[in-house]
Length: 325
Image (cartoon, rainbow, N blue to C red; front, side):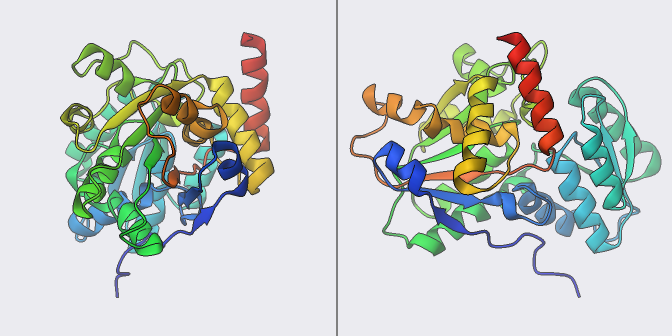
């Protein structure tokens, strides 16, 4: 019998350290504790259940968490999985994908090139294509993160804001849909990216979807050169209000280290971007500028997690960033 869904209902934890720093209660939605290591399992699980039932197998282009989620779900569904990753993917990721039973192909320098190969395999091998972030079924699955938050805090304890990281915009689309579904459209979303992986911020500034020349950030899992069109449209609609903000790789790294110390949880740099909204004072700055209210209701930070991190990887990122300073 097929599982009702593949994701788990993750804990919503209060962070004393972050709450003290911000002067308002900070809740952490711990997507880092999903079986595949990140929130991606919500949308990908939903999509695979809808479209991959009688499939020959699935193919996904992802140097990280979408690939991990696809490999995990394919294993649970008894389907072969092919994951196409760019050369920028850490060895650790390739190893973990293989441990999940997936066939890994390393092709192209960036995700866009790996994706071209995944689309080719869909055509030639008749595989079901699992997009990493740009699909309505993914967003519908990701929306469950908000439904769970409401179930934890109750509909009356409305957050002052929701903070999340943006890569290609899949989580953002899901959160917007979840917020609309529960009637929280007056709750602003703080959408965090790192400089050098800032496809949403670049689009917001340009007033249209733009493609970045290259991904120069070390937060490789935020590394989509073009944000999905739906995420951009939501950023323009004003309901809910989406505030696009940037932090440096150094700030994201500092947040990862701080979070490991304070909460004893290890997340990757992409997730550090969201945590840096508190640790680097972005939320406080937005309050000073009057873009978020003072006092602020409870802040919910979506800890998106990430499977492409270990101590060796963290040291390597730290050394790279020290050289740049």
